[in-house]
Length: 194
Image 1 (spheres, rainbow, N blue to C red):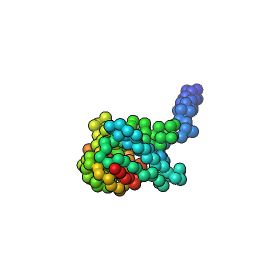
Image 2: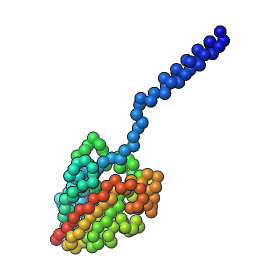
Image 3: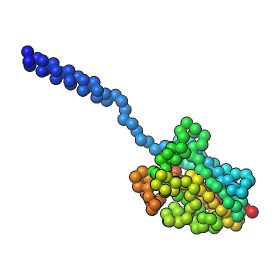
Image 4: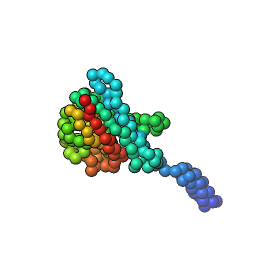
């Protein structure tokens, strides 16, 4: 009788543990967001009309064929630049996700030298220490890059580029273009006019 009770108890415990171990639920996936649209808004700090330049993925599928509108700014003017990712896709909230995960993301910039008097140079894509006027930071005091400030120089033309890096657990004061994964890399033609 004792052996039947033992077998019955083992059977019941096996059934209970098996019932709790349900493999029918899929594992959670941690996929990167597909960014297919970007809006740059250059707002003159002394007032005036904001300059908006859009870029979008012409295939609307892979994020690898982004076409960017030309940026046209006035010479010797101070601008605040805000960057919005997938602005039409309000359900995805990609910009908000980047802000929430600011400690994992970094925007790096490059431009044709001489386009801007502040910051000077050609950006921090090639050298992380080169100046960029960041206006937003993560909880560790490291820059994010969705908000920046710029002062244009004399009339000129060239290119303006930014790269969004995803750097979970490796973002630091020295992390740069070769660290982490690239979420987005866009180049605009830019003209500084009188």
